[in-house]
Length: 374
Image (cartoon, rainbow, N blue to C red; front, side, top):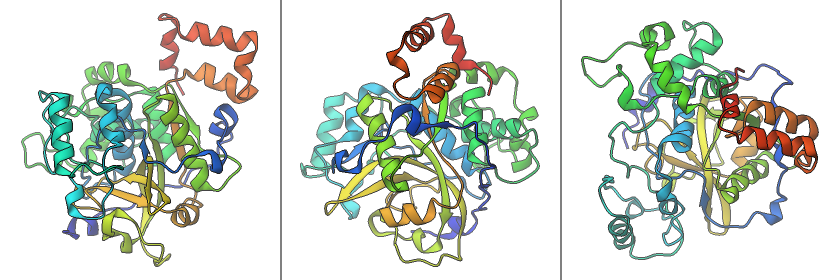
């Protein structure tokens, strides 16, 4: 693995300012007791993750946010079962990665047969990173960061916080990479520098009309009565069981020891004084030797971790998620309804007003609420 790109990373994720207005995931959706979360492999990402590389940009919040919305808005839901991949094995060896590019013209049968042959028919789960053909059919992290900066009202400072990133997804939405007129570090005429890309005024305003069609409904702080690890597992499992294929946006202090992680499993022994804050996407659970891990997607290319994917243990999550960078889960739920549930709790739908609000927000006309301003 080439570690040079990782040495260039600018760690600039900011801690969250206090804000009591965050919606509570626990209050609205409840939290599953740890004993009731099965030790199975599952994912809320509807396709194998597209692993991008932020190179030396301070755009980690833009990358993790665009990855969240790629799952929610872009990828083909008819292929959900291929990421769940109950027929495959999460291996700690190189053979566990299918290094083929998925061509959208392939039949699903052909694709599944290829996967099974490549993994010798083993019977658990594998994170199949790098399968998607890079045709730009995913959310653009450069535009996403510009919209995060627009939420903040300035573009000069480096980095951002995840609440601003969440607000940008709800307020402005996303565009696809193949709709973007700009690139970074690709040695193309469309390449622009960091300051140009961060300044939302440089992006054609016509793109905003495309982006608003890809807004998320609302976001919730992942909280609960258990430790951080089990609260996150619960939120992911609730999404998985309900068919909501939206991952979690979070952040932690990335430690240098984790740059080389066999099989993607990060070490529990590390120097707590080294490293820096970084935004990440959490998208599922992987069980290794009967121990659950949270699956995490990086933005440092396929050379990092296990083809861009890392596994975080309970100890790492509980130690590192105390730092205050935030952990947010998204729903396609209009803000007005999310606010009502947040005030009234998970039983709000049992009364007539809750049922009325739900009925109204399912009306095509009132679905404009999904574009409510934060």
